[in-house]
Length: 447
Image (cartoon, rainbow, N blue to C red; front, side, top):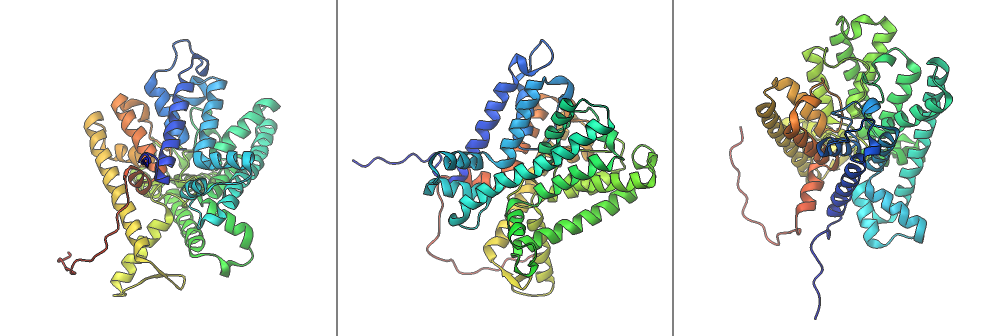
């Protein structure tokens, strides 16, 4: 008699979701250990769960101060969870398989392709190795720069400077935004040797591993770049410039933020805060004191997010650009959606629309629920919700005050935001269906 294979974890996306869930569970248990906290009362399960989810989902939202609440052991656990979440649990598992057997099986290749968004199964091995190598090189380089700066300019011992450099380098490249100071990086707002390496690391990590690997191969031949790479780099540059101009202009005369800095400091802080919604939660200005216009601009940037198959969250810049191209094609009356002399397939357009609409629906529902739970201002709650869903970590300071139910809602948002609506839905689906027939075409009235 032939035994039927269990349906659970048959789909690669289910394995990815299960891997991230297991990482969150292990992190929660480790953070609940007495040795993980500086006090003697221990950590409650919700605080441990929220922090572990924030770390694995590389978000950066916190309910307790990372540098004072957690012990060195707890900080190292958080750092490890950030690295696991950034690389992806399935990518790490593939690396272990490569180290042991030097060969990936077909099932492992499919799973890794789901996590890394590799184009084909044949290049998964190269992508997995490239992901690890790139992460190590960037994190090490930024850690050295930060450590030297902490040691030379801030009277920090060499050992402590090295630890601070590594922690914030890993947090930056993985777009996590965890910092070891209560004010994040506000105290370094005018220090380019701290802010610029962190910003550069966030940008590199946020454009996505496929783009990084393609640039390594074809940096000098931009005409040979894929549509994905061109679209990602173009959109990233435009959003960085617009974000810098809008945020700097809105906060230029605000005495609680940029207004207290000199002109170079204002420009640096404005650029830094335009980078962070890509989605790293570091801040060099107090977001509880920014203008409402800045909150709105940052909310939009957080929702868009960064590049696909990287450490950034949001709906991704390629999704956002594709939606703009759909609108442009429809306005011009064109049947095909085109970009860079290429036609974009209908299935990709449907995927972009699905991701955008699911994301809008989830953010809206979570905002309504949190407003009812907390009775806080809608614009503050919306900012927090988008920050959690976009795995950003920026906050106006209300994270600790939303209560246990609110913390659980934000934790779910971080988890869904890291994996993506499409991945989560497909992971829950028991089987895929393909119709073998077509119904007659209908044309409902639109608008």
